[in-house]
Image 1: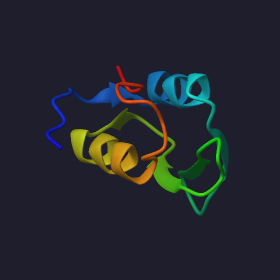
Image 2: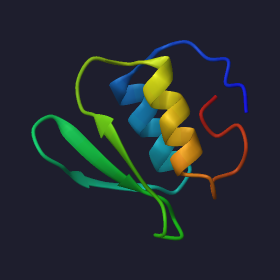
Image 3: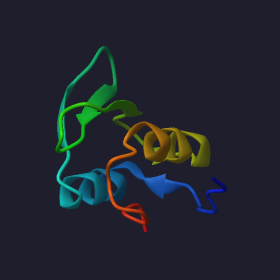
Image 4: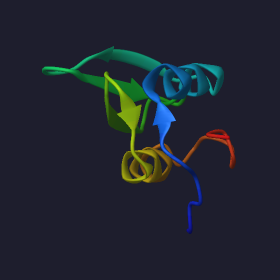
Length: 72
C-alpha cells in the first residue's frame, strides 16, 4: 500500500484516531498506545509535535481494521 500523506500535527492525528473509534492510553515517556475499536490492533504514536509520514503509515498498517482513508 502506498500512503501519500504529509506530516500532521499530533493533536489533529489524535482527533482523527478518536473519530475512527480508537481509544488511547499513556505509554512510556511521550508515547501513546492507540487501540482500534475491535481491540485486537494497537499502534504506538508519539505524544508531541508533528507526526511523521512513517509513523502515519505504520499506524495505518497496524490499525488495519479501520475503514480505508480514515487518516484524511
